[in-house]
Image (cartoon, rainbow, N blue to C red; front, side, top):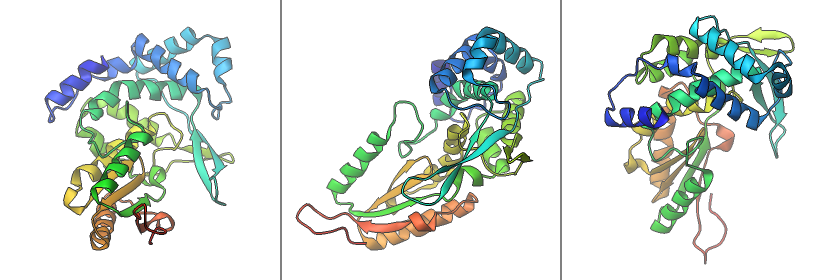
Length: 292
């Protein structure tokens, strides 16, 4: 199924898929989704139901219930449980949202169906959370460009990317490839499920919860707009989810690249994180320290 969807999307870049929802509730897709959730294990959501408790309840029983709810239009995701985890090496804490196990399964099923459609469009500059691509692949591009002489580097990450992506613009990006109304309704429900923190539920109109199974796909779908707007004349862009690096020939090109990157992100309702944005020069082996 995934290969067929990928080939269809690759063969027709203008195609919008209208028959996807039935695939999300297929028993084999839900079983594969459960396997992915089970392998990751993870903490319970606001319903306090663990992976082990699901196994006691009966995996087949739960998947059957989810399939029925999806097919009959009764499925409603619960808010995710918000926790704050320390960021290594800083005093900051990163918000992590933990959906209930049942909702993680549905998100994983949606990811199985949708990922190959969007994967057909994603560009080589993007490496994060993509099949058969890794941080090592991104690093190799940086090494290669450095050897070619691009030693001026713009380094940044997107400020609060996962919580800042506007829902309306994200859904417009999804709709470039998907016109199945039931799938779009399901994705909107996932985005609007909100988060619960200290007993209070909030449902902002921005953000895809960091910690959700489908959130990395949402992030890549949205930031694909950045990737395709980028001009190699501004430098070689390497993006890993919400982290971005541009390899440039000179400091002046790097300064122009940062300005261009900032403008493109502003058009998406995003911005570089000031504390993690810098221009550096990678020294040659015989040179001294990095020049900032």
